[in-house]
Amino acid sequence: MRCSACGYLDSKVIDSRQTEDGARIRRRRECLKCGARFTTYEEMEIQRLMVVKRDQSLQPFDREKLLSRLLRACVKRPVSVQVLEQLVHEIESHYANQMRKEVPSSEIGELVLEKLRKIDQVAYVRFASVYREFDGVDHFMEELQKLKEG
Image (tube, rainbow, N blue to C red; front, top):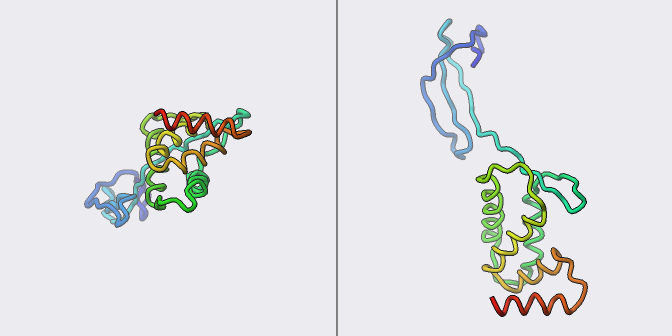
């Protein structure tokens, strides 16, 4: 780190602590040339997950968009916002752990359905009807039959 007083490039760390929110590390440093002390903050660089849409365009993953779709599917269902936020977090973590930069929207949708099925079956069918673009009662019946069987 460059010294804020003299611009020298070498310093030593005197003290390191996490910030209250745990998202960054606060470091007290001392310049090895002039002895000036200064504070730096470090935070983890998070690589944005890009979603490959059906038309092959790329969009950044939008956790708020996914959460709003899940909330819509869970209207008047006994599913808390915290459970849905945890689901979104699990989706993000799943792909972050794989270190993938681009993921097809279809893959994300299937993972969401897999997790939502375990949370609430009605919300699952609602989400599936929009995600899989049901075009009639037959599609609903097919999905309900799969749900009953599995």
